[in-house]
Image (cartoon, rainbow, N blue to C red):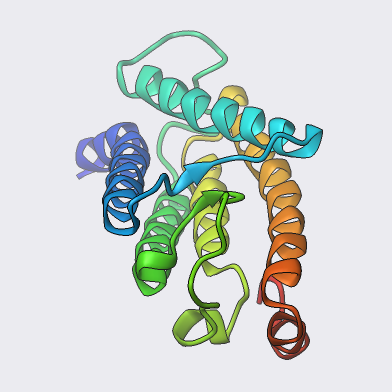
Amino acid sequence: MRTAVADLLRFGPAIVLAVTVAWLALATRLTSLEIGERAYGFGLSRRQRLARMLFAIAVVGALAALGLHAAGSRSTLFAPLAGEVSAVRLLGLAVAVSGQVLTVVARSEMGRRWRVGIPDTVPDALVTTGLFGLSRNPVFLGMLTMAAGLAVAVPAPAVLVCALAFWIACEVQVRDEERFLERSFGPAYTAYRSAVRRWI
C-alpha cells in the first residue's frame, strides 16, 4: 500500500499537469479552427509580454520539474522538502485534480468564446452563466487551484517557484483581460463585474 501511494505521488502530479496542458492546447486549436482565426495570442504591451513569459516559465518549468521528480532525479531542486509520503501531499494531489476538473468544465462552458491572452477581435458574446455566474475567472481559478495542489503534492523548490510564477502571471493577465472586456462590452461587463466576484 505504501509503495502504491509513493508511486501515485511520484507520477500522479506530472500526469495531471501534462494531461491538462495537452487538453488546453487541443481545445485552443479546435477553437481556432471553429472561429477561423487564432484563439491564442498575447498583446504586445509590456504587461502582456511579462504575462506570457511568466506563463511559459511556470508551465514548461513545472512540466520539467514534475517530470524529473517522476524520473527519480536526486537534485534537491526537484525533491520534495517534506517527507516522501504524507497525507498532506496526497491531499495536495486531490486538490490538483479538483483544479483540473474545474479548469476543464469552465473552459468547456466558454465554448467558441475561449481565448488565450488578449484576442485581436472581440468574442461574439460575454460568458456570464454557469461557473461564470459564480466567478469571473473560473478557468484561472481552476488552474491556480491545480498549481497550488501540485506544489503541495510535490513541495520541491522548482515546483514552488513555478507555482509562484503562475500566480503572478494570472494576476497580471486577469487585470489586462478585465480592461479588454470593459472596452469591448461596456455597460454589460460593468454590470457583470459588479454582480460577480473576480475569484470566489
